[in-house]
Length: 262
Length: 254
Image (cartoon, rainbow over all chains, first blue to last red):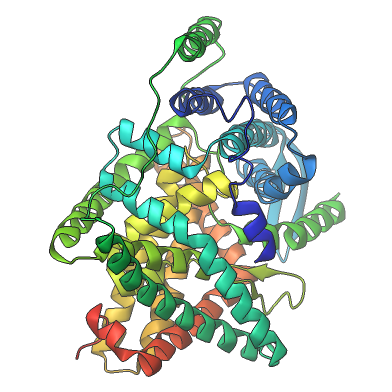
């Protein structure tokens, strides 16, 4: 839970640097185009380009490899898992074969190559997402979402979830510590029961807090409308230049056949 | 050669599964464009109905949105509980899906929206899942997880069993269906348009079944049961301490 709090928090995005200062819509456009190009690519070059450029950009704002590594662990393992699935199910040239618990298995070259392509796409895509999350706060993403005409209700719920997430994580940690000190986690069954009670308390607290929050918000003038108070600034010359370069890059790469629909 | 392959598979199974089990959401970049679009189309009606229900309740019930937001946050935290996997005692922990719980409390359609929001936050800030894979992840965790959990809860409730068992059924069934959805999403990756349709379907079905069996046989099977027990205890605890909450949310009758 401690790691979760550290990883989820968007304190990196609250820093003041050249990447956090770029307009959120421009960043979303770049990331959106990047993710699209990434899944459309038919080779490993484009995903690797996104991986390297995102890494360089993140290093310019002093994001440590440890922070990136923490977030990359699960996707990397998932990528290897996908490579195995592809290797076992696609292709014809058998590289390795054998049986596991009486089940015949064969790793095939073509499948592994497809798996490798998916692995690089995964790494490139995840790095693009990290570039966004390390440089953009949820509030700004919500504002951009409103500009993109995403329903207000969804944005409001997202804002509430994100606003109270850290508070609930902190309360959960405190309760877990108390449960641990009362030997609540010594056996598997006790652990499960403790988690059950913890889940129950968490629900009660969240619902009671929701009532209090609503009362407090109503007293401050909330009548079911917007909960976000920050505003987007108008786009300037630099923003348009970045948008245009993204468009030119897309046209250039598709002209040279870097993408394929599959 | 056979021994080497068997060795590789055993080692990778032991290393990979606990890690993959941490986030059984399909990661960014894995889905080709056609499948990414297919899954978005599949979830769209559920998200639209869920959003309309939220809007309607927001108008009718003052304070409904803060309630949904806070319960959503609680379910998000609940889904991060590190539950130790019985078969891999001490080696790994797995995380519950949490959709059974949210569907039980807020209804399946609203739960789809909550799952979508949770998956969006996880994709951005934990790198679990992704934006182009949001469709398939919402389908497995949001749609399949929420609806199966909700109906399991209601069916067991109608059978007259105690609230613990209703929660248990919701937790177990929603987890099973979530992993089934993920297996379908991954299995469809081996679907090849070049093959004749029956053969392509057979290949995909085989892959889906293998992925599902591998996960259930290792970490996710015990996790389903564990999540069921946790949800059962949690809902019983709420009923014991503050029954009014469950009555106002129409989880139990007055």
